[in-house]
Image 1: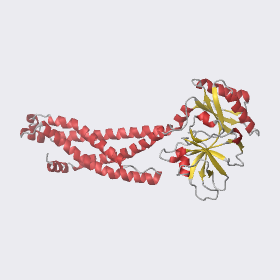
Image 2: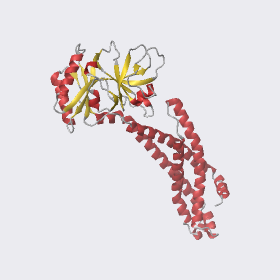
Image 3: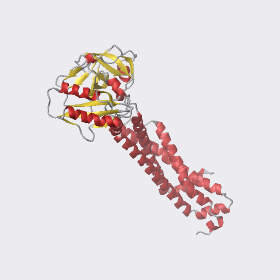
Length: 408
């Protein structure tokens, strides 16, 4: 197949050629970045939380008014929940993984350090937390009950001991020897000794999985004396629904000067995780829909333009067939012609894709686009172009020579 005659023919159809090439280029630019965003969001949806979510639920409690004996009220609530026949254990906390709200702090090696070494989410918990959440303690020990103390938010303090995740331990102590070392939760604070290291524990926030902060967490043996608190409860296997109902009834029977939302006040962890990732799941679906629509529109454009060209060239096709051209020759001609247009569009689209990504990096702190996604997008567009042109090219190759030569 001679390329030069095909290029000469394309020069006589500049408008259609340029439009299809630009359409392919724009589609490639958007699809590449969309696929990259889908990959990031999908990885985020599947990232480890570090806890056993089966038979786990959360009670979001808020006291009416400003009671002065919050510590006693919280202790009574936890004791009542632990006594339920459907419940294995429970604890009170300020937040939970993927809960959406919580405390975080810069982590330092010394109290007078000006710039933080790392950053971590802070969980105010007790000696029951590891068991209730099903966390995996890979080194060290759990808190003792005598180490758990009340925390007044008006005069915060730091506990003398803490349990941190492996990700935070490696960030703070790259040599891998974090156990027994001291860290500081902000400048001017008291030291906390690392007594345990967890395999994983997600932060309360659904941040990008590429950011290591998503697994940088610290447990602190503190009971936050706030007007609202979360009770994390592990039900006995197969009794989750009954335990959720019993927990609400038990708490109101103990003290009805509280607010627990009828719809979201008692929520199982599967629903909590789905809610936390609803925006990311929606973004994946939106980006996938955009990719499908753009690819469909591009394919339709190629089919339409090629069909138009076939109609215009019926006499030319007939002449070639009469001179001995085979059906395969006609088919190869149109496939090659479309391939050249697609190559031009892919080259231009690569430039557009990288430029679009650079703009997103500067404007929205997006990660840089790996070239593998440009290659994947280019292959998709080239295959799509050849697939789209196949039908009209086959119709052109099947036109009998005598019909084609009389169709003017």
